[in-house]
Length: 236
Length: 308
Image (cartoon, rainbow over the protein chains, first blue to last red):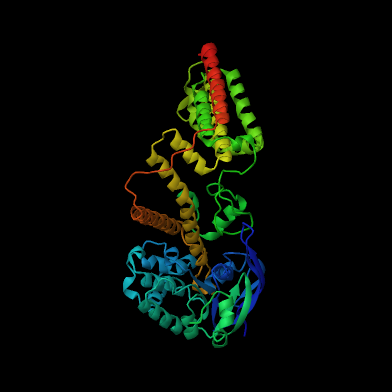
């Protein structure tokens, strides 16, 4: 069985010369749920943006057994559902329906299939009744769920989420954690929310200064206050 | 501007556009071969050490405006005066260390606007030079018309050069101070300042939107799912998506302006823009100012007397 994500020696610097990733290697097996934690500016979001080729650094990335290249970009973008930190960035269409339909329509799926996928995706996140609403007027928690629906409609194998619980009230956060727990895909979640990590994600990768400083079972890493403290984190 | 940003609904065309022409967006710099990261605006200011950079911003601002005024008031046909004005612009370009090539390359940006003056070449009465039919009309290109067109082109080209030297050698903050010093209404100056500050934020927001769109622009993994169709959707659909993005950006800009205004109010803003009293212009810069103004005045007078 192939690994869902394989990253080898990934290096990336921003155009201003600031190095964001300095030789990152890891692999994630299919179905695994992994947390990506570390201080601000550690390179977490930058790493996520590499998984579907939005950013292209040096090094090798393979997703679902396919090496990332110009030729496989389209297939890989369908395979990796990227949920951005700010749902407002993700929801750019006129209505919720249009947003959730964007991925399938872009792929050229027939209309009936698109409608079916949108219905299913909205049902999965519990937002079926919001299809005709304008995203601009939804609450933060609703926007987050719909942002997830916009990638579920593409039936991805991998979900990559950037700070999914930031800015949510406790009830919306709880609902989101439950939702993520129910989804069967491979997951890589960049977050500062270590309580969610402990609950939801059995494996943790700690990134700091563009390097992986720890990679192991969440329960083990979260028992090491010195390690957490050294990388700007706190015991949950 | 927005139409440029949203030119393509799918990411590959946009990214390839940026790769082919890295400055395609608003003079934005995206290095070739690098995808959308964060658009670094090409801030026209180039920090160099030169007498032009050191000159007080207010003096530079007044001289640049006076130069542009002189260029536009110099009568038609006063070619020697234009040549002298150009030599002033050239000296400033060389003295500032920016280099003539840099300024001329950027001045090419003004060329499309010159096209607006093309009708002059056909509508000015004079010696016919070239005649050709265009549909039902017979167009006559006159020699006088051509000269008038060249005159307008030279005027705008010279003016743009002065503006480029000013913007490249003066920090935006100093430009705002200069505008305030010459009594441009404070509210207007404050608006320039806010626009400059938030243009970057808005462009960043647009980049994040486009990135989110790219992330979902994939192809069906089983070709049988999308029989006989290419990925990317129809043109009309892409246009609708781009329209939605532009609308979204507009709504957010409005929302943000509300938030900024509330933040200003909560810190005591009452509609009056206040600022520190400005320092007096140093004596050396004053001398430069008067010499510059006298020189420009002389050139203008010469132009009026001989060709006016």
